[in-house]
Amino acid sequence: MLAILFVVGVGIVSKMEESQVIPRSFTQYVTSGQDFIVMKKWVASFFDQPQDEWVTVNYEERALGLYESIQPFAEGAIVSYSQPIAVEAESSGLVIFTGITRKTGKTMTVLYDDGDEVTYGFVGSFSKLPYTSVKRGDTLALLDEETMFLMVKRDGEHLDASVLPAYLSGTAE
Picture 1 (cartoon, one colour):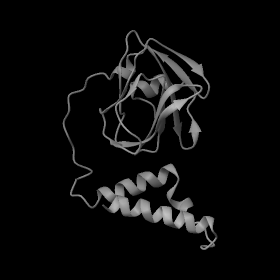
Picture 2 (picture 1 turned 135 degrees about the horizontal axis):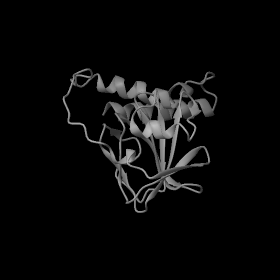
Picture 3 (picture 1 turned 180 degrees about the vertical axis):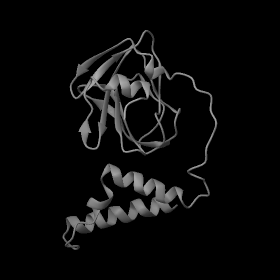
């Protein structure tokens, strides 16, 4: 209910800015990716969910780390696999885009809580809708083919394709 009121409030303020009833721009404060993370954490604080609790898990290599080759493409890379895989969330975050683009076909972008913005392209089917919260290990999409486009944006800069193998293995800093 709170989220609905917030969205309606932002919409009203946006319309008032367009008609110049409000001289200052307030919507710029709630339309960037980092603001989504802040708002998500703020809303989550209302629910009694401990954030820093340690959970013991069994380690198993993630499917994204089992690639065969990586080739630079656009501002990311094409990652090849020996078979179609499920694309899983790296950590907690928010799906900020699902759709079709000219360069990468069916594409999904996730803004993770650590600030990384990761785009997965050439996916076969989506498992999450836009503005859906995700946790580590959640299935985001399924690949129909054995290739995927991957682009990682960290601190406003795209990671070079040469760094992506470390990112996929979970060792990139």
